[in-house]
Length: 178
Image (cartoon, rainbow, N blue to C red; front, side, top):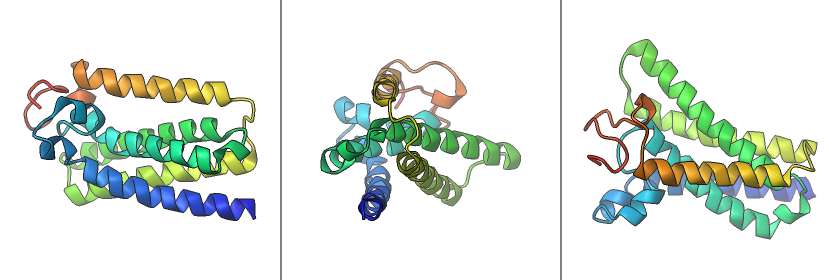
């Protein structure tokens, strides 16, 4: 019965992240380029900024889910941290692989990659929870989530000058030319 409840929560989370992540692509623009909003949503078309579309909605839903059912699972936070990392990694690998092969990006492929990334995040986290992997790793999970959070907040304001952070349209990084 507990697995059925967890599975239902994971499906709701998957849909929540897809919906909120898709909308958050536009939050910065809709807010009149408010930098506080931009800290948590994409401020340009760089790959890094698009990773926020998965990270922040999944973090929000993870917090909600933790208080609803997550406390029952000793590895819940660790599983979510590894799930988020897996989804982010999948997006990066899939995007750079297909654009490297064809030499450009295609919006429908980018959207599909986002969906796949979110699916991978939830499949990985669900699998870790169900298998009871690393039940003693709550502290590691918290550390990983906080590290990702700090990176997303910091690198929007002070983006490293490398391709992952470069807006292919403006050539800017983070809030620079956003």
